[in-house]
Image 1: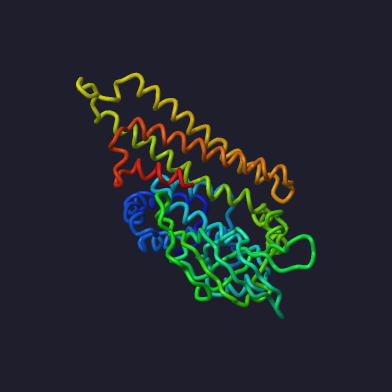
Image 2: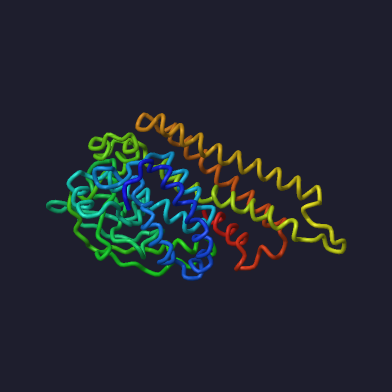
Length: 360
């Protein structure tokens, strides 16, 4: 595709046009316990995975505002598939925080990479000449079946009191994926376990987790865009919260559409004419607007502070984003209860939304 004159607007428009496709494939992805090939290919063709990649590598170099609009639009289609997309976008940001030599190698002949990122330092690494030997097991490898690289957190053996926590990047063929993602929510993300056994990782393919979380990684020194001086954990929490917010939008719209077609048992009165249902819909709509406003305000704070956000500020942003998800869970739960037994069929979109947001 030709480079759009307004990349943010173009990507948001493409995301909105893809939302119905995500909704169409939601049940199939849930049953397969992984995103469908059609959805991943369509998102690739829409160039959405390039959102956070610097323009020097052929990406769009967009910021958090574009990230929010794109993922919220996709999440109206399906939470699981939006989650995968959200993190595969954000993991390109992580890769662009690694040392420059690795970035140039990685993006030499491509403008984005598909890579799960397991942020918990579940593995252990021991120093070796020119790098480290990494081993361990990591859960939650979102999108791993369609990926070509892996990002894994590990603890490097150290004689000091403070452990050296680092991210390591490895080609997909260097790891083993175990089919462990048998869950009742977010099944479509395909977030299986990854096992790594005694794999050498060159020094330029690792980066300090602490530096990334403080917005002071090598990428912050290389790239002029303030995005790369953004602390990691609030950014990750933003990526995790948006699928819940977008799916809540969809659930409220679906509930409102169903009310006129449902009758009060024994009376034949449409549910939409009953005051308690009108009040419930109004209350839940306002609650959803509050959750989305809190999300947007938190992202605005994050963009104002960037690497100047201290530990207290970062923790406060994490707490706000957790509150957003809890509010969305409560809204969808109440709508599910009000929708009766039909919302508990495995094939029902409201039931899937409830399961997914509980898992988030």
